Image (cartoon, rainbow, N blue to C red):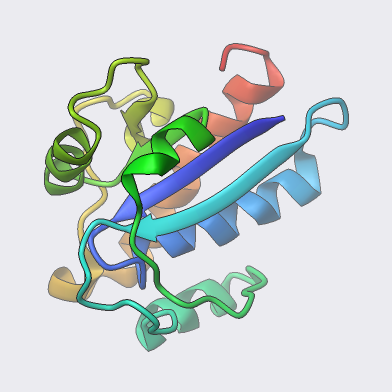
Amino acid sequence: MIRILFVCHGNICRSVSAEYIMKYLIKNRGPSNVEIFIDSAATSLEEIGNQIYLPMRKTLESHKIPIGNHRARRIEKSEYEDYDLIIAMDEENMYNLNRLFDGDPQGKVHYLMEYAGTPDAIIEDPWYTRRFENVYKSILEGCNGLLDRIISHRV
């Protein structure tokens, strides 16, 4: 089993979108010989317990991405050992994850856009930019690249 955790600041826009987009992709084109567990979390406490931010939810729904009963949660230090990949959306997330995990001793923490062939690119925070469609497209690109790597056994 491959276990993947997507992480952003509040777990109400980007990381939860990546969770549901990835689940959708796995259901529709994922490998039948590999079980994949997907979850998402926040680095901050600001949105704990909140649902997906409504404009982000509407964007996912417009693309027919099934959405579950999500409630934002914060990542715990102990989760480093629970996941094979921990995927950050931007530099702030990466900084906070490295602080939480005392670095990244097993090389598990990556940017989502690494899997889209643009390792220095970030997923902008639509809470501030209001560009929900752009964020959806970037996350979809990153998740497709990640799934391609899983299918080709390079993860």
